[in-house]
Length: 563
Ligand SMILES: Cc1cc2nc3c(=O)[nH]c(=O)nc-3n(C[C@H](O)[C@H](O)[C@H](O)COP(=O)(O)OP(=O)(O)OC[C@H]3O[C@@H](n4cnc5c(N)ncnc54)[C@H](O)[C@@H]3O)c2cc1C
Image (cartoon, rainbow, N blue to C red; front, side, top):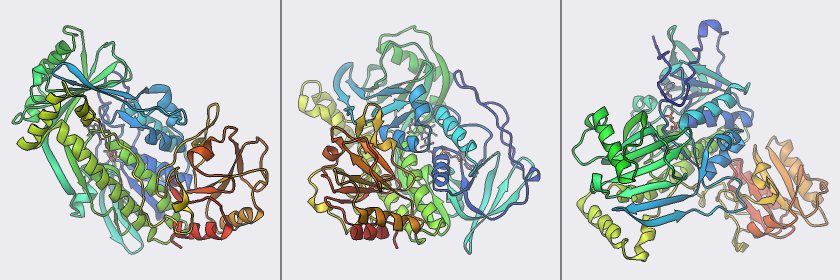
């Protein structure tokens, strides 16, 4: 019998709610479900919300009765916010989070590099925003609980999953004992220690780094702005690295590297934690400032991924699919992109709008993304925690040269999580004018936001299906384009035609007309009147034309749906 803890988790700033378990004895007999999602972390909840946006219902299982312990992921990127906007929770993060865009690297007490990520006026969201993962999970959960297509089941632990003909048979344990459930598809979003992954004997590929880091969240009043602080080779922790981040509610994260040979058990002793935190505070000039511990943990960097995410009807996503170092804020930020991709691919297959082969495209694209992240994050990890004597020599040379030489300072650059470009995706259209473009997002690229008018951005209006964004002139929408869009919609494919116009008046044939008096869309997307962009449901570009015609639009949608 599964007995999750009913004791609220300890925290000095977050009140954990303990939810009631879902019990099969209190519910009608279970039909075969479309999708069961195992794990109500960031990946599982965004997958459920994305599926619901496409009209697909799901059962969302959480082994626990409360949100995750400790702040865990605290830094969320602009692209994550754009994804969260799609599922209706970005405004809550904006209201409660701390936006930022600058980072400082300090070597032996001297500031050697300042990173300033540009904040383009065309972007609605800051490059980064800090909020603790429990809050993010709470906002996502509120959205899931309010959605009638999502059946959230607290205290339900999946204990067995088996691929069978046309679906998956599962066994789920609860506080009143187990029950069985059949589903057409099972999403394994059960985190880094995925038992589904280990029960299927699937091996992650890649590397694990030996260096161990401690994360300690403390409440303290420090007069610093919300910027990332990285201390290399500081007096009290020679040869190692320390990071500091401001979190909401007066919390600071102190993240420090241990010397080789020190065990996590030793490092997490209260005296050891106190000694290190006091040393760090002394180094930055706040010796004796009172502080209080909220949560601490240890981690080591890993760059691992499954080589395939789709195993018949079981699909891995988020940390269950890959383990990425937290340097560059890869964990939850990558999970959102996985979930957004999975949501539409799976919905299209379930609704019969695309063959099952489309799931293979999801796997190929997201494994490609994980591998790209692994290459990039591996570089950051080797800089933060050199894995060998050779790497340390090189890193230390950069550090000491940076005291006097400007040219080496950019080597500190923190490669932050960014969305993968699906440049070689099989869904990219060969029936477009991509080669004729001299700017704008290319095939496979994520979208670029555009400030159309005050507090009115392009991405506020896109999403939920394919989007055809057409640059209109005084002639409006050509009737052959409007007719082609209507034909595609009759086939059940969600496609919205958005006209970009200098005028406010709605244009006939368009589902919506966005007024763009300064022609910012045309500039940013390097396209003139008569041209258009086709966005996939995850907003990546799959076709673009300098001069759109109906036949090539139809062909491109067939390619994007693998028909
Ligand atoms: C200590 C720690 C610190 C971290 N710090 C950072 C950081 O600073 N920055 C960063 O970007 N990332 C950080 N991460 C990583 C980040 O938290 C994860 O990348 C992110 O949570 C991934 O989301 P997920 O949904 O894939 O997995 P998880 O958030 O792990 O969610 C998995 C969910 O599945 C549930 N579950 C597991 N097994 C079952 C089962 N059999 N049945 C039902 N439910 C099940 C779990 O209870 C959990 O709710 C940290 C992680 C940890 C552990």
